Image (tube, rainbow, N blue to C red):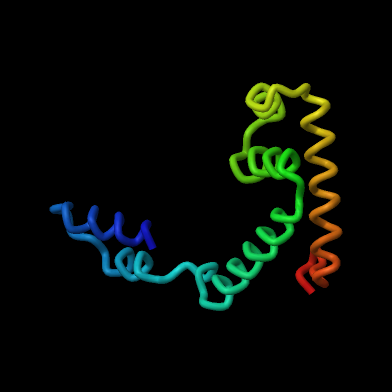
Length: 112
């Protein structure tokens, strides 16, 4: 949605004529943003939050920093005052635990 708004602003500020095909292409919604896909993403986020909440705090911090904030192992190690191998171990154990929780909720990697 933001991309359409910025494109519209660029079109409005431009003095050059814009082809109607370009305007039509800009107004087409991204198929990834269909109501179904938005619902699936929200459900997935909710399931991940549920699984994340089951983790002990030290594991939860590592998962947040590594997977959500996309920090490197070195950055996480420095921030948490751990060794790189400790960060890797906690991250692995956390993901195994989350997978167990999700399997108990009957969620598989392929979404079925």
